[in-house]
Length: 157
Length: 194
Image (cartoon, rainbow over all chains, first blue to last red; front, side):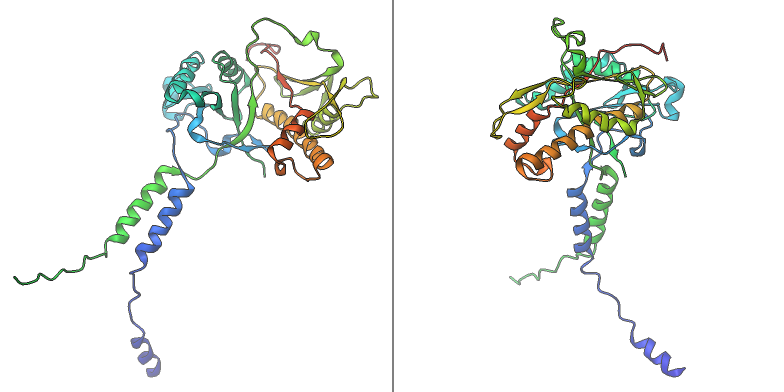
């Protein structure tokens, strides 16, 4: 037994932490490159798993040219005010179908005129939503001639 | 003057600072890439130049989804699984079959011989009560039908297995052979208010 004790005492040298910052910085840069900033805080229930599934999906290119329209049930803390029926969210607030026209115009005004034809509207709609509201949105988008749209979907496994 | 000895800066807290930044980025950013089905909406017609009634009946493939999420394709009920093959058959068309859309011989840049291009249009109509999930399933099947046909054409004309592997000019040519014509009809309210 004595033999073992002697050995253990010898091995207590602290590990050098000098390279720890390097490792952490590496992680930091990885995350800075691989992720994107969260756009808005959602007031509706729309997790990634609530999006419909599809196989023929394409990546949404040029995120700076994309405006998002979210549709889904309001989150529980907003349900007293806004009810449980699916609602539209534009930017950070709830909106009506009639607000979409204004929204598109505002989005256009923010960007350079030359890129306006390339702008896309991404519809992030909860899969249990009825098509009525989606149809209304589409009609509004047509009125605003924002014809490039993208139905947000996740990859079917 | 005595030279002051420059003491080394203690870098021990560097790790803490880096951790702080790292955690900040972890919290404020998202990893997922946005994906979805890209679609072009039709512009609002200024004058009703070419309504569906004027298109030859055999040139339209009508897909109806009702409020109970059931499909009616050209007047016959159908499952979503069968839709892709039926749509493919329609898009591809056949000059000898009077049931399928008419075809026009077209000269396409990049392909030596004129190609028969179908004039078929897929008309997708849904009810206000249809769920978005079902609608997307149907959209997906229709896009899949086009993509598979384009892949086939890519192999036939350019010897590449996938449409995405082609050059831009070649892709344009294939797009002319199989133009994606999915018309989403003006909204109708068939199934009553929901």
